[in-house]
Length: 186
Image (cartoon, rainbow, N blue to C red):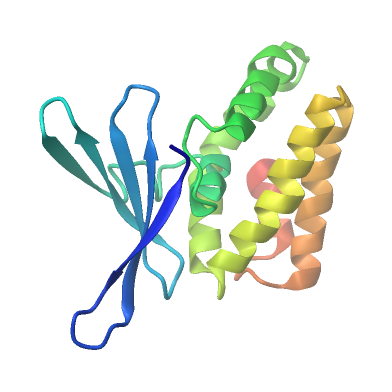
């Protein structure tokens, strides 16, 4: 089962009130992430255990979809992907086996996790988070994963800086690229 998109609608008006991304997890449970169709923001998730018949519901904060989340994970979630998707696994492998082994690697990783919630909040407060998430997925995550696949490791951080510069030109966020670069200490 891949990711399945469904919609919840208002019975009277027929207007879409929620977009649902459902996927079977490796542990066999069925996870559904819920998105507001107007803002593109996650509202929470539910996890169904077919063995017990029980469904657990999580707010966006407790589901790791909001202010405390990893911005790369938030970007992938916005694209309807799982937390254990191929892209995030490759980025984690890069973090653990390449970046962490570099002299400044531990400091870069620590700063990323410190600033990541602020970056997610900046994206969520932008005028068009859906467009911004798509831009970041295509230009930050996908390109970085491609560079990792080609073993062009030194270019991954350069790609991050380049993407942040493009964000400044697009002016799609309420904060400037300088603010994001300061958050990331680039």
